[in-house]
Length: 131
Image: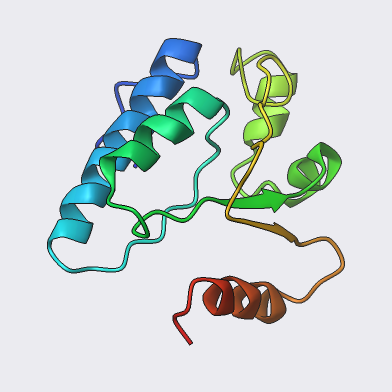
């Protein structure tokens, strides 16, 4: 998404809001076309998560909070974004230069540290009734 649809956006608060708005609109179009859409994004602000939720009919949107400590996110980072942010190359990066507002009432919270991926996926699919 950041290399295509949102390539004009950076990591300022305004850009992050627009990033999530665009993703939400695309997910809504896909849902309206009959697809099951799974989006995995760092969505740092509660207001934007609520904005996207309001795009969907009740039961169409499931907020899943993947509760992972910042240290683990840094360790797993496949794109090296946390390293770039720590070096000052990406200002306002979530968890380092910009805050993350934890969800107050997600539909599901999963932890991933010390768990096999297939167990996490099964938990999500079971909670969303897709198994």
